[in-house]
Amino acid sequence: MEISWEDFTKVEMRVGTILTASNFPEARNPAYILQIDFGPLGIKKSSAQITKRYNKNDLIGKQVIAIVNFPKKQIATLMSECLVLGVVGDDKDVILLKPDATSRNGDRVG
Image 1 (cartoon, rainbow, N blue to C red):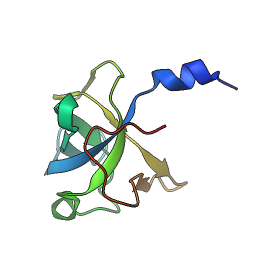
Image 2 (cartoon, rainbow, N blue to C red; image 1 turned 45 degrees about the vertical axis):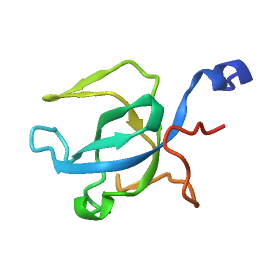
Image 3 (cartoon, rainbow, N blue to C red; image 1 turned 180 degrees about the horizontal axis):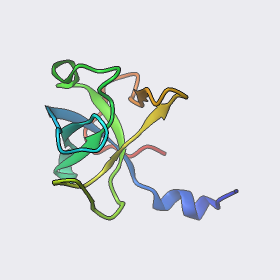
Image 4 (cartoon, rainbow, N blue to C red; image 1 turned 135 degrees about the vertical axis):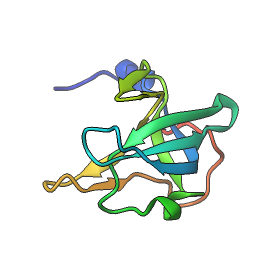
């Protein structure tokens, strides 16, 4: 299905830096709770099913790409405020999307 350029411009993909990553035992599938700094947009929380590939301590300080203008979504006991983007393989292993150079938190992907 094709989308228009106007549709694409409505999706706010932004760069953020992970401040904290903690276990999320209430989640249906293994996940972390991430707190991500999006600069002028503030700090947002997200659930991320990235436990197969990433150690939570290694995530601190890493930059990621997330969609920040979806409505908030209740995931178990967490109100998720953004959607962290990644490539999902056949085995459900997620590879995070990230800039290949340090970017300013809150910068828009386009």
